[in-house]
Structures are given as C-alpha cells and as structure tokens.
Length: 189
Image (cartoon, rainbow, N blue to C red):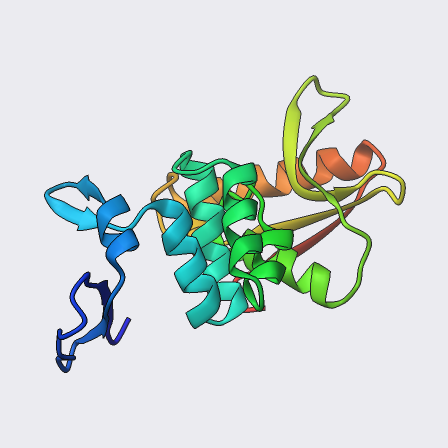
C-alpha cells in the first residue's frame, strides 16, 4: 500500500506522509498482538478495517488468506464483519477458507457479482485412471468445472514449465473423460 495504517490510543498523534494515523483507538491498541516484534491489530479488527477501507475484492483476498492460514475462524471473521456493518457485510458473506490463491478469491467474487449459482470449492473428482483431482470450482449438477490458473504455476516454482503444462493437459483430458466440461481461465482474464 501507499500508506501504512496505524492505530494509536492517543488522540494527538499526527499523520506522516507514509502513515495514516487512526487516533483514539484504545481498544484496538489494547487488543493488539505481538507478531515478530511488531504490535499488530487482532485479526477480526484488521478484517473490519480493511473491509471498510479497501475495495471489496481486496478485503476479500485478505480475509480468505487469514482463513486459509487459520489466523481466524470463519465464524469469528463473519461476526467481526457483521458487527462492522456497511460494506463489510458483503465481504463477510463471500469469505471462504478454501481459496488457494488470490485468483480463486477474485473468481469467486465475480461468480457472486454475476449472480451465478454458487459452486462447490476444491471439489474432488475421481477419474477412471484412479487419480483424484481437486477442481477449484465445480457445479456437479451441471457437470462443469472452473479452473483458475495463476501465473506462478508456469514460473518454474512447481517444476519445469513444459512439465507443468503436460501434467495440466493430462489432468484436463482425464476430467473430460470422466464426463466433466472443464473451463479454464488465467490471471489476466
């Protein structure tokens, strides 16, 4: 971010060019936790703050990450966001602990925006070859899978890019042979 947001118990702290000071937040400062030597707002408070100050999809990416990392439970996150009200309510309704990446979070947010039927996330599909694949999103009643591929997949982090592509093609073929229509999308789409 361009600025770091900091909470202060005191009401007389001044803004600095790279810091937005939130004054008079005694309760937030009191509930802060020490993380790697820094005092950090509690996860529920952080979610409330980002949901009320960032675009919904950005707050949703942060919320999904917190859930996936086990920093906060779904129930606690939703309670904190419901308490915040306003724009935070939509973030709370769309949270998921199953998102493996920001790209999946963004895709889920678009599914909500487009009023599509909600899919099952991380849906396991058993193929005729004895392999089990996890689909990012699946609509079993329609036989449709949506796969959201981030660019890191092809960067070499998961092995040679051509090997990754070959494995992806094999997986795609096996899912189609198991009766699924597979729709793929990438980050830039």
